[in-house]
Image 1 (cartoon, helix red, strand yellow):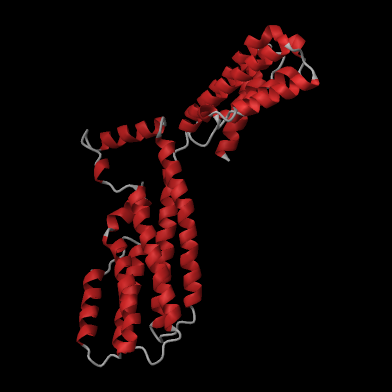
Image 2 (image 1 turned 90 degrees about the vertical axis):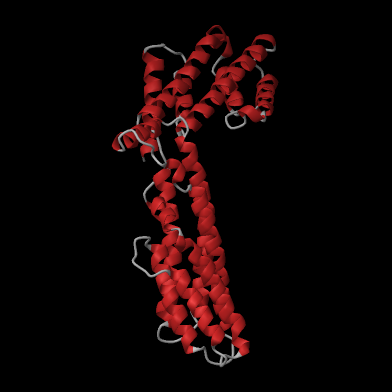
Length: 349
């Protein structure tokens, strides 16, 4: 909604200035370019604004050459569009290159004979629209998407922890793997969500570039610490956190797949393994979902369970592949828990 309001403000201001200050005969050029320039990040507004200006200038020049030397006819209008769309494929203006063709449409389609002496004014109007769009996006709460990235990381961590806790609750009374399919689907949904999370994190990184709010935050943080270092270099990045979570989701998928296969395993599950694994899985889920949860060191408990089962000669050899797979998958997931600071930082960017 904020981006929509900023776009409305930018386009309306550009239209008013174009109409009342510049007395433009084509007052839609400035608001049109202003609307195109208000992007989701300041950096994108600046880079796309430059591309729009260059593309529009090329479009005005193209219209002048074709209209002045060939006249405005059906075939010359089509020629201008063809050349404009070919030019839009240039890599350095590709994002806004279509403005070449659209500017040619505006200039040639609005009566070239009347507009020819005012082509320089058309460039001024385009520049005005770009300048207003950038200014509005820069001044009116420039977007900083770190909180959005933090919410994604937080959501995936909590979902992973909830699945582990659900497994523990389900198996605390009986070892029934009927719900393994639902857990597998949930883990697969987390994997899909990670793709959006990566895109959001890259988006958050872009939102920092050229953003004055970033500098203001640094100054405020520096002041709070009495002019000392902010410790930024000691904080894990979102990329590192998501890489960890991505690996954890992969092992969670493997764990749920093992439970699905365990449904068809013959014989009873060992009670010592069931109780020990359930307790560790529950605490691992709590620690992943809530980094402030008070739990005992999980990795040590998992090692103790493995050692205890290794000494138990009564375990059927046919069940060890399943037990070993569950222990191994949970052990890999526990590596996420070991770095609690990363999860906490993801919740407090």
